[in-house]
Image (cartoon, rainbow, N blue to C red; front, side, top):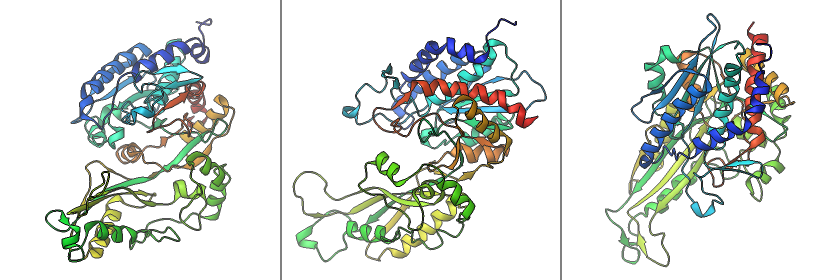
Length: 463
């Protein structure tokens, strides 16, 4: 009808309802890293099915996996037009360090212009914004220019361990021409970002074992190798202390150097050392020599020791030589690098470093490896996304290389050969994975407006 409101008018009139629905979803403690929350995750999946039906989607259902369930729905009313898959994840990081939370993590509130609680920005608030934008079309009877499929998974925070199997078993249902996934950040309120690559992730635990049991350091010190000493020497050999270059032989073999045009484009963004210090609180920045901060955070591979344990770490003194020492090693890889290849090079290097006085074991945790992936910035799906930001936010987005890892990107590309569009509506100080997570209320609603603009803009690029 002529008097029916358009999608933007509908969004403006339903803001309170949208916030209330998000808070309801955030009350489920959907912590996928903790098996104790299995029932909470199941309840959240069932809630999402009902909510998708309420938003007007069809065929809403739970998709079972060998782990936590995913949720899907469709709106396929334009035969012959492409299918856009809207992706999100409803699982969240643990809310540990409870004493540091100002407000309870799973009792979300809207206060001081922010939505507070675990999952506000990562990723419940962001995918709910996308769904609200699509629903504004459905609820107002505005014709959609594409068919829409929804997939919301419950295992992203544990590396989407069953997503590959799900895309295979449900290939007909989930087949699409493009994916849009809002699970990233703007640089600030005036600088939206569309990611054109994500780094891969390789993760391994190194264990050094010496004597069969802990030994008295006075009686046996100097006569057996201390596993912590050996571990420290091995870890120190992984990186040059001056240039910060990774010293694993062949580590950079498949890394494609940035050409000058790409370096100029990356460095035209407002990612400065001053910004890095402000965001991290570090006294001074460090990193691979020869590269700027903007280049390091997305376009260069890394190796970091993210945990070390061994010996006595309690209060006071206990003079023992430990039997074992452990380190967790995390590597972020750039497109063209292979997780399997780099892991094998790391394994060979560490085994060669280990003296015969100890034994060494490397353990790869199941599901903690994801490939890097790149998107074509010239894709019409990305072109439409860029123009949509100009409409919804009044800003031209930056096309940047992402520093984090998103397993779903490579999985969708590998299964369906489709572009993945990655906008983001969060901010760097949202506290993702940290205490006091939040999302700006206005940016939550702007995310829905972006989705409306994206759907309006797509026909200009797809024909």
